[in-house]
Every structure is written in structure tokens, then in C-alpha cells.
Image (cartoon, rainbow, N blue to C red; front, side):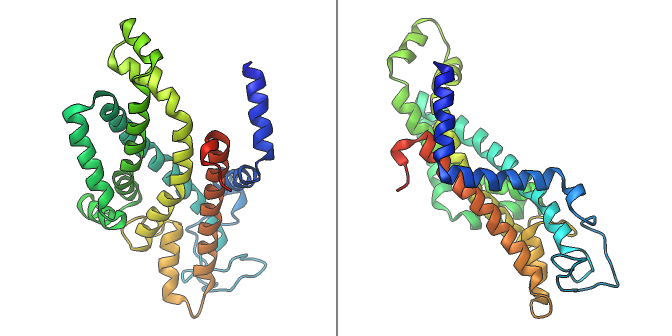
Length: 282
């Protein structure tokens, strides 16, 4: 039975154009990140004083910046930052959101009202303003920017998990587990959580592009990654000062960001069609 279900799922994946396209793009980003040393012709922080603001050519595919650093190499190394943002950001949001959502949905009562109030308050405040406030308090840096975005975005996970938990906790298999002496933590982790994993996968895949864009925006504003990091947002921010002399400094990092966000978006749509047919895109 399991083998037939797996085969059917793989066949559905192969027929889903969004999933295939998104999967290929995301895999290419992972390959760039893992093999950055082999793909990039130069270290991302290696300066060539004799080749400052050189336009794209055979030696420097994407040109060089105002310090003579190879832009192509910096963009390739920047994929590692993107994956770091995606993994850590998604992980923190899941830990906060799923934990709070399970507690609110299962226990209800005062805990539910208090935590739901905090989630609604977080939901109401504009995300970027709140993220900037958090970064101002805890300090600049990529890790702090990721934490700030996670603090802003966990509420969407919490609301979804809470709603799913409330719809599941009164079903017969939950009551059976309780009758066999299972405690609340065991019920939440062994019975409820596995049933919401598919919707969590869909939610994460749909939220990742926003997380990447938000963190890149913080770097662009100067409170995320700091020089000489090859963060794409930071590269665009630095390139604006030379937009008339070297437009490639903004164009290529921007295209890399569009490519990445597009890949995660399309993959998310494909996963949504596969795992949650009721939300199937037209």
C-alpha cells in the first residue's frame, strides 16, 4: 500500500509543471551554494585594484564592483546566505508558531486567549516596521535580521496550527489515545502534529519567498548583513551609489534574487497542488 501511494505521489510530481520547475530552480541554488568554491572563479572578497568597475567581459562574467571584486563570484557565494536565511528563518518560525499553535488549539482557555492576543497583535503591526524595531533592539547583523523576521512571521503559523488542532482534537482517534493514558504532550506530538505536517510543508514553502525578501530588505537598509558579506540586498544597496557608472552592480544581484524568489514561489505552488488539492491553483 505504501509503495503504491509513493508511486502515485511521484507520478503526480512528474505531471506537476510548477513543482518540476520550482524543484529544478531550488536544486540549482543548492548546487551553487554547496559548490561555490568550485563554481566561483575568485573568492568573494578578493579585490582587483586594477579592475575597478569593469563591465561584464570574458574574465569577469558579471563585471566588477567599486573595489574590483568579481560580481559573479559574490553572487554565487550569496546563495549560501539565501539558504541560511531560508533554513534558519523557516526553522525558527516553525518552532515558535507550531508550539504556540498546538498549545492554544489543544488547551484553549486562558492560555489560548493570551497567546492568540499576542499573535493577533503581531499580525496587526506592519511586518517590516516591527522587524526594524526588533533589529534596533538586538543589534544589526544577518543572524539578528533572521531572528527579527521570525519574530514577525511566526503568527501566521500559530493561527493555522491552532485552527487545525481545534478541528482534530475532538476526533475519535484522539479520544482513544487519551483513554489509553497518553498525556497532552504525547497527544500533540504523536497524534495531532503528524496530521498537520502536509499543510505545514505547504505553508513553509509559500512563506519562504517572503522571508528571503524581508531579510534582503533589511540588508539593503543596512541593518542586516554587513560588508564585505556577499548578501544580495547589501550588494544592491552598495551598487546604487554607482548606478550610472556600473548599472550591472544592481542588475545582476537583483536578477539573482528574482530567480531565487521565483523558484521558491513556483515550488510552493506545486507543493500546494500536490499536498492540499482543495487549494489547487487554477
